[in-house]
Every structure is written in structure tokens, then in C-alpha cells.
Amino acid sequence: MKAGAAPADTKGEGGGPEHLLSLDPRRAANAYRRQAVDTAKPIDLVVMLYDGLLQSLDKAKEAIEARNLEQQNDQLLRAQRILSELSAGIDLDKGGEIGGNLMSIYAFCMARLIEANLQDRAEPVLHARRVLAPLRDAWAEASRRIEEDTVATP
Image 1 (spheres, helix red, strand yellow):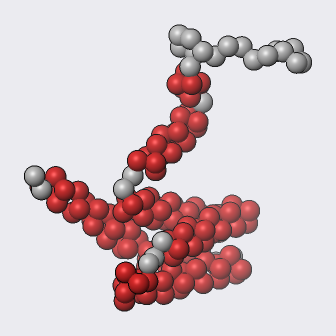
Image 2 (image 1 turned 90 degrees about the vertical axis):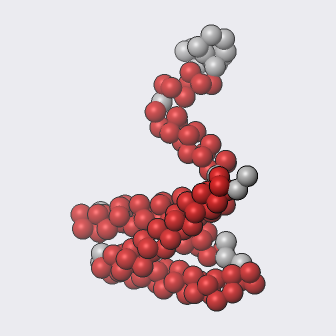
């Protein structure tokens, strides 16, 4: 394309936005994820956050073991942002004791992730993962039961 030339028309048969997405699998995957998030129920968003959190913890552990400090830092910071999102979603007035317990768990795990990053150690990441994985499974089970109850109710 010459400098200053307008891009080719992408409209028309086979040239719409769907066609452009099919050219780049990453863009298609990102669009799919955005669609899933935009249409998800709140409880399913929590499960998605946990999935992303556990994925970041796994990648952080691998990076620590490979001595890839940049990846380690990126993944641990991503995990910390997700923990912050989960914490921000807790309504202590409605959540009562359970909400307070979750806040304590998230604070504990946040401290473990900071420790892992400062000391370049995988053990605190593994500790946080052992605490968080059962919570993810509990949220997924709650979502499944809610879905079953919704389908069973006429």
C-alpha cells in the first residue's frame, strides 16, 4: 500500500469483520472470550476469574523454575490484579462471615504472591494455588447447581 493510500474496502462478500477475525486466530479467540464475558452470569464471571488466576499461578511457577524473571513478574502481577478484582466483588454486608473469610483468604494469597516475587520462590505460589483451587471448584459447583435449579423450575 502506498503512503497515504486508503485501505482496501473490507466490506462486501467475505470482507466483513467476520472475515478479518478469521485471518488472525488470536483476534478470533479474543473476540470469543469477550463474547463469553459479556454474556456470562455473575457467578460464571467469578469462575472465569478463578480460571485466569490459576492459569497465572501455573505460568508464574514455570517462570520461577525457568528463572524467567520478566514472565514471573508479569504472571504474579496478573494474579494479584485478579485477586484484587475478586476482593472488590465481595459485599461484606450481604456476604457476612463468608465474605470476611474470603477477604482473609485473598489477603493471605496476595501476601504469598508478593513473597514469591520478592524471593523468586515457587513454594508460596504453590501454597496459594492449593488454597485457591478448591474455591474455584466450589464456585463452579455452585454455578452448576444454580443452572440445574433454573432448568428444573418451570
